[in-house]
Length: 329
Image (cartoon, rainbow, N blue to C red; front, top):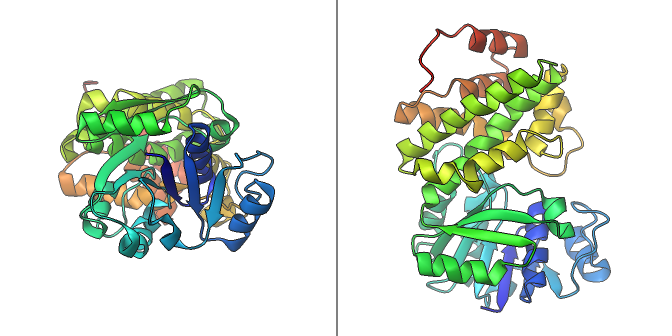
């Protein structure tokens, strides 16, 4: 595989295009925004989403999905809630058996489906894989050390895909549990909002640590109910991603929670943000999916209720602290 197509010109899509170019691949990046296409091609920079980071010159941007028709591998990186419409638009240009590496984290609203299920319905002849793990786009784009999970049902295929995108500073560990990898990535975004709220309210490091730990229990329960493995979410794509996203304001999701914790409205928290905070859209979907599966997720429930405007931050916190005492495991 030498030609890689990347669908999505946001910060993460651009960072992954950068990774593939550094791995020696020919990269074509599709972006919805004409100004993103223009600045990448003219200035080798994504001014809108990764300003100030020089991009590899072999990255070519396009506004036409048909230009990705000859790709040997496609990385799908649109926001999770736009994955279905974007893949449907790409479908006429996708050959049977095309490997599609899903790089967006979330649960689709309405259908309550993971991205692999969305891919199966839109590009049923594609060969699916999932990329997930602790990774900030700006750090990856700058070439700082990063390790992620690359999950694919066929371990040999996972190894081949890892070899295509790996660089000395970007290290994919392969796995076969796509569901576990997806569940970890989707739920951690919701929990990051909760951690931001804790931080914004000044509740202390002890509360922050407790929330990450209890949140990880929710993440694990939901992953297992979906058919994933506890071992998978104990790795980079679950625990690793959760620790990163819940520990730094660089996280778009945590930054939203910080604003909510400081008393801003959701509208105010999102004002001026070009990049999508996936947890905002995924929170109600994660809550509804957990209810459907009969999985208890009180922290995710609280975040969804706050985002819906059904309860205030202080009321949600008090409700969590008032839950009956119970055995930890």
